[in-house]
Image (cartoon, rainbow, N blue to C red; front, side):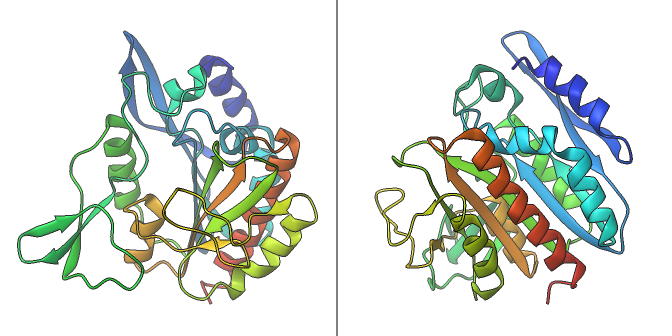
Length: 266
């Protein structure tokens, strides 16, 4: 899909939301707007998607089902901050990275593990002295990081991804702490797609028996954990999952996170 078409359809579907341009990037001599949508509510949920261009299910879910998502959140009194297509040039080209071959994912925070020693990632349970908001990285990340950091701390944050490496039609999620709030969402998803339980996902880490993985990778999800957001997760469906199924799984988690945000993060 051409990104111009995506923008036109997003604008058409955004009735009841405030469509904003939080930045722009230039790739191959062409300007791509960076867009966000915002609604009012007593609680807040941040939705992000489209860090990787070959993972279209998130951006398409937030495009095609936007009226449904807005109505559901409104019914629960939850305001939304939606960043639907973070890497527009990669989305249009179907490439993982942007057209400059930069990697927009991660690069939100850096960990100080000892005086003067900084790391991009830490292991689960690894001690660190502190963390800071990173000030470098790809242009898409810099623009998004600035926009997110200017917003109030939300009650929940959900990042929509896909896995382009695992074979089969599967789902799993990156979470932190007690996974109990996410179990109903994973169980509901299991009615549509297999759960990637106890499965290696990146050559180093594996999911647990429930399809969850914990990794402090400096991503937007990790960033929101460090900001004290009670519920922050990154949902994955494999790119081999039928597109309509991936979108239905995304909607299960979006609705679930609306409800978690409505509960005030409890």
